[in-house]
Amino acid sequence: IMPDSLLDEVAALVEWPVAVAGRFEEKFLDVPQEALIHTMQGDQKYFGIAAADGRLLPAFITISNIESTDPSRVSAGNERVIRPRFSDAAFFWNQDRKQRLASRREQLKTVVFQQQLGTLYDKSQRVAALADGIAGALGYDRAAAVRAAELAKCDLLTNMVFEFTDLQGIMGRYYARHDGEADAVAQAMEEQYLPRQAGDVLPASETGRVLALAERLDTLAGIFAIGQKPTGTKDPFALRRAALGVLRILIEQELPLDLAQLLDKAADGLMAQLGHKPEMQEALDYVLERLRAYYQEQGVSVAIVDAVAAVKPTRPLDFERRVKAVAAFRQLSAAEALAAANKRISNILRKVDTGLPETVTADLLHEPAEQALAAAIADQEARVLPLFAAGDYETALFSLVELREPVDQFFDGVMVMAEDEALRNNRLALLNRLRGLFLRVADLSVL
Image 1 (cartoon, rainbow, N blue to C red):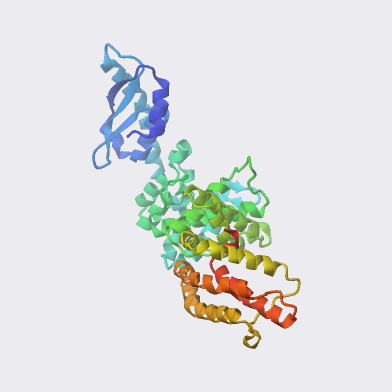
Image 2: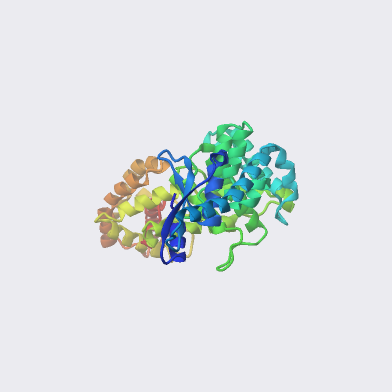
């Protein structure tokens, strides 16, 4: 078991690396292997050894900085060092199982999450309500989600997690299973922390996804509500990582949830602690702003992300579909001309001082080019509005490409800002209707 980080660390510690094998008593294998591996790697810089099926074997490898004339003494010394540490882990494991996770809930009232936001018990109550709503919206098991939220932080009060904080969630899974909790609840204990960092795996279970979302959303909503948003140098509650985790789960696991609604629900839960329902717009903007970094890592053009962000979609999965549609559209030969036309239309409409007329009057369409454009827009509306409703933005944009020719002919043959006010307003309404079609996906004038 050779993680890159440990390998790099050990390589930097020795000049003349010599591998030395060691063993430990099989009785220690009754302790969860994550605790044993953590002890070997974290304290002693040992490499554990696993069987082909992933089970930990009662053996390890350590790296000596010298080639000993008596390797057996080196092995014995390392075995002697690890034994009391494993004995401690075994003691914690046995002691912790004498008390059910659920019985530790009351103790959460003694652990402060944040002074203004209450204790971990208060947080677990908020997360449970939020998890119930998320599970209901997705058609998942609501009872499992609520139970998982209630138990989520109970393992923080165990001896094992107090000693080995990196095992939070992992030990929760073991203790929940020992207590006879449902598998979905036990698995969610560990998955609530996923993804732990960039590139990490996402929760595999439904209840795990719900709990991971609810935990992060409550933290984001709460910290923004009390005015402690992250700065360029300080992010004590790891809100950047929390926001990116929310986005990854919603996008990559294809959950069609509205972020604005989720944060609004999270704000409801804060009323008991704050005495009022906090405004969530700043928190929403913060999370959505993280999409720039998310797509930048994937090599997506900033212009594409900005074009989609300009129309302010608040469902991250919907945002993803728009980004893919605009990226595909941008590869078409007509894309550049249509983007330029959208920019031109945007500039024209921006200069209009009075309100734009909402409807196009057919009797005022005098020029053949404007009649042709109006007909083309009507034809496209019939085709693409159902596609927009279904979220099929790529097919819709590919259909709208057919507007290139009538748009070009319109600008070549029609004076938009005519002296006749009625004609002018009608043509502005026509352009506004055209631009509105593209804005159903993104603001192409940004491209």
